[in-house]
Image (tube, rainbow, N blue to C red; front, top):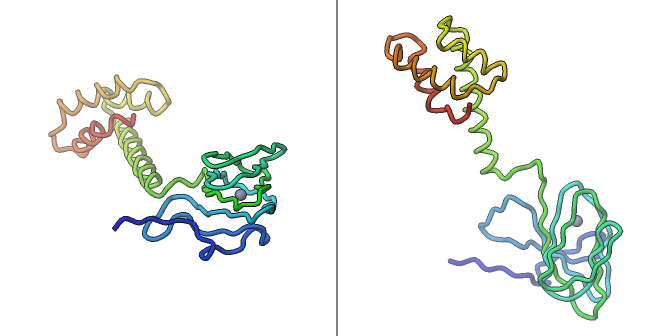
Amino acid sequence: MIEVYRFTLEKAERAHENTIWAAPVIEGSIRPPFNHAWGYLDTKTVMDKHAHAHEEVYFVFEGEGFAVVGDERKPVGPGDVINIPSNVPHTMENAKDAPFLWAAFWWNRDQDAPALRRTKAKAEAAAKELHDIVERFAASGWDLIAAPAKAWLEGEENQDALVKAIEQADAQCGSCGCELDALYKRALELKALL
Ligand SMILES: [Zn+2]
């Protein structure tokens, strides 16, 4: 079933020192990776001016008024999108004899969406695994692989030479039965992360 939601005053509660009405924008089964609320100003009222660490965006849906962000004050109406940088005091003013409605979305920049966080964690784990493997190569005592591995660990941009050396090592000794056999193959799988 398609989920469609809209603002109604019945669902709204007082917010921002009782200066506005607020209600969730997104309801039901949707789990967005950001926070949100409708803001609704009665005629000729002003929202309590406030600031916060998170960034925020307002989308104006209905009515006309003013957005105040920092020292600036601009007339805004339906379709306008207002950028509110972090820690900048901001408010909305309804100058008309009609309701003023906008949707606010806010998020923490250091707080990635859960899906992105998982992808990042996986990539970090793979990079760590590869780094550990290269350390094993560096300590192998086999110059073919140890020399380029050490150079890479010291920060040299020798990815291509290291990959070539791993390929050569895998070809020469990749099935000799030693504990490095599997590591050559794994390193080659992860070589894009070098
Ligand atoms: Zn705000």
